[in-house]
Structures are given as structure tokens and as C-alpha cells.
Image (cartoon, rainbow over all chains, first blue to last red; front, side, top):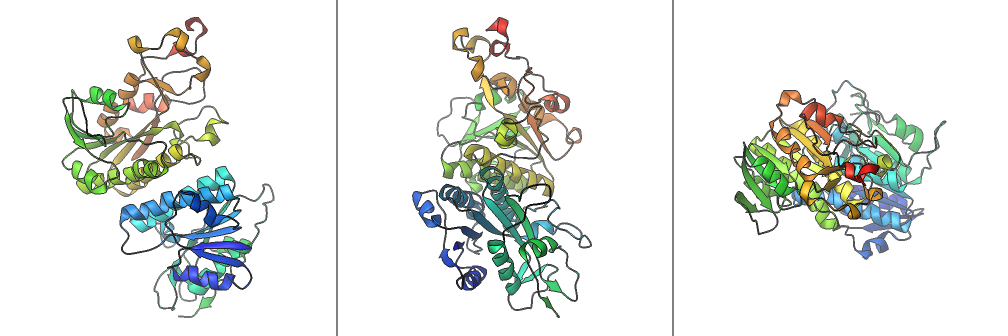
Length: 222
Length: 249
């Protein structure tokens, strides 16, 4: 499979590429993603694009919004034109954290984004992805990631260890989703990814990712 | 009430200005330098966050008429980021009423319009990916999120097609009923929704983010304007029957 992964400054992107390279042709590409013809060249020949938002402290809110709305629109526009069949967007569980901690929140719950710029950007990027999935029939998979932790030190009710994040993304890239019993497989799928912690109950259900993507989060004793 | 209007030099702007200027202190703004009128005017790009925040200081309400349809960069800057800038300005200054505007497919994109009838403004947004509709829909979503997180009310007025009324109307030979959009309204009737939207008390609004279809009374049955009548007390005065009634054609 030919796979394009964006956001090379992200450790997660680099780790994903390292794993994928074993059995796929992989390219790592940096934004910004314009609407020039070069955008089509970038995605040409790719079967799957894995996209995430660049997180830079120097980025102001206008640039962050531009990245989350216009640039992802441009990327999806090029993907549709070039026949890319699958688009995996790495989002965040932040828009689901407004629910009380005692609720077991899965993908059927309505997102409750705040106006904090990073969370809002994830929400708006999902908004763009959803319309492409609905209208242009590209297979879009949104992975709402918990709080990424690479060294096992993060105190969070929705921690996602690095290795789990990588395995979840690989599952989203490689798995063909089965049709439901009464409808064809949807072109729009959201999955929550969170690791297990033996001392804290998970806030977010990862059942859908486990069943459909083969996601098997490790359980770490803290 | 002191009202900041963004995008006031557009097609609808002069009608809104006329409908509001007798009862409100208006600060008109647009990206264009020129303005021919007697109200206070500032040149302002709605995509300029600091500029919008600065222009909104001391006002009671913001009316956002800004729109850009074709250029991809500018459409996102104006239609989507512009709404973010408006809402940031409202929160910054404690402005509790924002009137946003957009085309009907901000909410009811081709997935509704090409298939359905009785389309009201309460439906979940499905703009599709068309540039104009999608960027306006993102702007509306930003408004909705801000209204749910802050102490302010957003009223969004949706339009589609504007018609001249009275003496300015097209001659009968220029009217093509097959081109008539069943979401049309005269400029004057459209503008009359703005004072109603500014003046309606918070407790008369069902939620902090309300959307209204603004078009005249039509027998086609594809869209519904009942909510604007019921909540805003908006009454269109011209049903544009010259576009759809055989005796008038």
C-alpha cells in the first residue's frame, strides 16, 4: 500500500512511518497544504493519507484555524481528485471531556467542544472531514486520541501510550471495515483510542476500535 | 443600541443600514475604502482578528454580513475565520447579541435540497463540500460553539435569492419562473429581519443559537419559514407571485 503521512515534526507521525515502512511504501510530507496543483502531485498514487495537525507553540490562532479548516479541505480536495481511497485523521478526545467523569463516553455521544483553540481546531477539522466522507464518498476514519504519553509519566484520565497510539493508527490504515448487518460500511467512522490503566477506570470506551480495528491497548500498572 | 456591521458594502448591506439607522447607532465596516452614506464608517477586513476586536469596543451587538464566495483562501478567511474573529470580539467585550448571516446551504446543502421538501432550519447542518456553503457552515459551527460556551446569543439569518420589489422589479419579459428559487425574498423584507433579530429579548429565544430561514411566503413547500414568523414576528410583505402564479406571468 502507498501511504502518505503528514506532520513530520510530530513524534507520532515518525513512529507510525517507522512501523509502516516494513510492509508499505511510505512518504512523510510537511504542510502547509495549499490548493495549488502541487497538492495533487503530493497525494497522487497514495492509497491512504494519514493526517494530523501540527502543534507548534509559535502558531497563532488564525494560523491554527487555517490549518484546521482550509488546509485539511485542500488536502481532502486533492485526495478526492486523485482517487485516494482512505483518509485517516488523528483528532483528539478533548471535545468529549466536558461530559462528567462518571459517564462512559463512546463515539455515539455528541462532541462538546470548548472555544479553547486547540480543541476547537480538532472539532472543526472533523467537521470538514465529515462533509467529505458524506458527499465525496472518500473513506474517512477519525481517531480521537487520548492524551499522548511516551514515557509513562502522564497523569490523565484519558492517557494514550505511544505504542497504543501507533498500533491504533496502523489498524485504521490497514483494516477493511465490515458492512453492518443492515447497511453497507459507512465512509465516516470515528474511533476513540485510550490506553488502559489498572488504577483508573477508562473514561472513554474503546470497544469500537477493539472490534473493528483490532485495537488492543496495553494495560500498564502505575 | 450601538451596532457594528461587518461587510456593510455588500448587496444586502445598504438595505440593512436603512432598516436599522433610525433606531440604532451604526458603525459600518467593509474591506472597501469607499462608503457613500452618513453613518460612521471604518475600513476593516473581517479576517483581521485584532481589527475586528478593536472595532467592536463599546458596541452592544454585531451584525456579520461579510461574505466571499469563490477564492478558496479568501472564502475560508472571510466566511469561517471571520466568524471566529466576530465571536472572539463579542466575548472580549461582553457583547451578548450577534447576528450572523449566510446562504440556505449553510445548513441545507445538496444532500437536503436535491432530495427533500419541508426543509426547516432546525435540521443538523449538512453543507456538503461546495466552497461557499462549506466555509459558511464552518463559520456557523464556530458561532454555535461560542454560544454554547459563553454568555451570548447568536441569531443566524439564512437567505438564498434576493429579488427587487416595487418599481425596481424586472419587467415581465425578464422573469423566468423556471429559474425561480423557492427561497427568495425581496431585499426590503430581508432587511426587516435585522431589527427584529437585534431587539428580540433573550428569553424569547429557545436557545442561545437560533437559525431562521428568511424567504417570502411561497406555495412550493420545499423550505419552511414558519420559525421566523413564530419567534421573530417576521412577516414578509411581498410573496413574489409574479414569479410563480400563471395569471401574473
